[in-house]
Length: 300
Image (cartoon, rainbow, N blue to C red; front, side):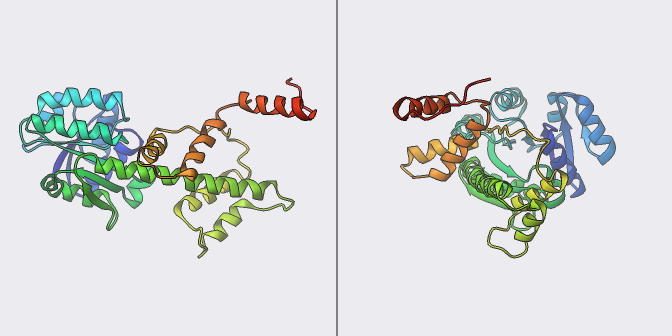
């Protein structure tokens, strides 16, 4: 098949390469045009110097896949691409967008005679090698049309039509919420090991746990790699960002009256990691001093 892919960041570029390796014709565009040119020269794709050129390089029904940051960037490119498309063309949003936004995009494009699919893509920088687990929302007929692309991107059994508009991004949102909780559990466990009386080799422990234990996982394999590079993570500051999906998962749990304490606390812990000295902790120390005369540590 052929498609246009807009956005050659960490995932987009590797997705384009995987598709080219699978025999598809891929027209690529990036705001930094040199990235598109370099990818085309090295891997055989077609570089477009503008969105207009990308669209004109595709045959109808066109497939345009956006791999851009969620939010404003994706919205702006949708607004730029849609006027260039013809009825029956397909737009795929591969960003980690809010599923409610994707529902709105699907309905807006349908009113113009266009087809929309939201694709939640998991695989990170390893996707080129192992494939991208892809969760897709949209019309069943559109899913069937783009399925050869999904089959190339994903490992065996690694893609699914999850339902109508928004379903793909909804499933990916919950996936990322679960990921928050799993990562937090590993983080707490390894901190206890690090602080213990034993001089433990955390690289060896993480490798051991991946040999048939009930906590083995790909995340634990990545922990092993991290400890191999830096046994005590001395070079890393404990500052943890979040990209939105954890917040949305917690909000969805609240809206649905679903208790989700693990995911919620893992998100709150990320917030705490960004504070060098929490004001809330200062209040706690002050209160203990006031009611019990407990000692406080003076600020430097």
